[in-house]
Length: 516
Image 1 (cartoon, one colour):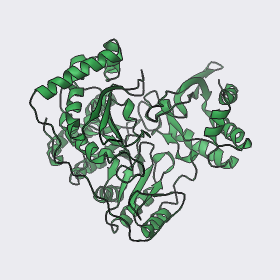
Image 2 (image 1 turned 180 degrees about the vertical axis):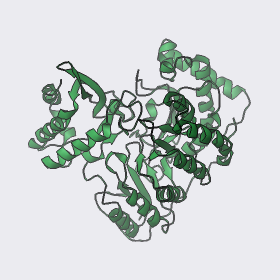
Image 3 (image 1 turned 90 degrees about the horizontal axis):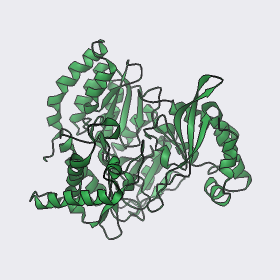
Image 4 (image 1 turned 120 degrees about the vertical axis):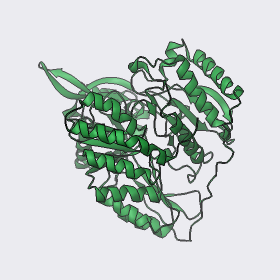
């Protein structure tokens, strides 16, 4: 499988431009257009009057050059809205047909590929956002994640792919990328090697991944990726779209153990084929130390490089103020070695800053950054935008944030919650401490906007847990429910984590009053 240079993708663009023009002229229906446009990383939004475009950022890394392109596009095309996604990409929203075509083409000039951003293709490879600079990490997994991402682009036009193929790399047991329950995940070990997990995923029929290999040398990871593809080709249900995900193979093969056996057989085939997939020329970056200036603050993190810092910027709902995003790009243009890293919880980290630079970036991002743990809550783009969304998750989050601010709860009284507008779990509601999934509830014979409540999810490696489904809460009552939870924890002088741990059943008791 050969890697593909970004410029090569331009040969596919005339077909997209033609089909998009036909769609906006009313000559192509939404379903047909969706089936076509996903390959290009674009979908029509709800109502069919505007488009979104997903800009792949492999490993969540946004270099200064790529960020400058994002800012230039926002200004030149007057992009109305952007979103930092839970798969570490940047989405543009509310684009017209001409805008989406032009931005897609120009993005290739700076190495930003949108192809395969939707549809039945390998998605953006994920990576721990602070890899390489984080205190306590096992090792820097980012170079390997980027190499995997480049290799996977060669599978975009391969036959018999899963409906999605999500690959993640984790640099520590924090497991922010859910590497232990992706289609394929590489979890770092203290000895500088990877444990490999496979056939996991959230959404319908959620499954934690199964360990298919231990102590894998980083230079060998491409063999494991190809084995994943061959395993799905042999055993995946690619004829049934509802079950065309790797996690269903645990079930179709009879057990997790049988899946491991099948995977290892394909892995042996890859090694025996003689194809050389060794990554012997991956460059491990060397990060510079600071200039002696120091920084501190609630959104400033000290890196493991002496005198270097990262600034945390979490726009509410992952939707940044576009003026701030553009100003950030302008500021970083003069700060050598800095870059933006996107996190699976929609946080952005600006890394490799000196102390002086950190305070400048802190001030620049103060306008729309979360001021509490609860305000870092995660939400998918929501049903007001997404064609398949059931509920407007962004609207719910905004209502909850406003209610919590009005109640003046102390920071920590509520956790980071996760909201998905539909069962797809783009907001990762299934492994959130508190999660909500878009639903509907009949009240007096009429359907009412509601969300299903999940509690007790956990993503940390070795402690993974799917949240328990407690029932359905009417959307209008969720802010009130959360305020009561936060007030109850605060009244005991505890943060949410401590209160939940030391008061078993208390959350369920509160929730019972709100279940419809």
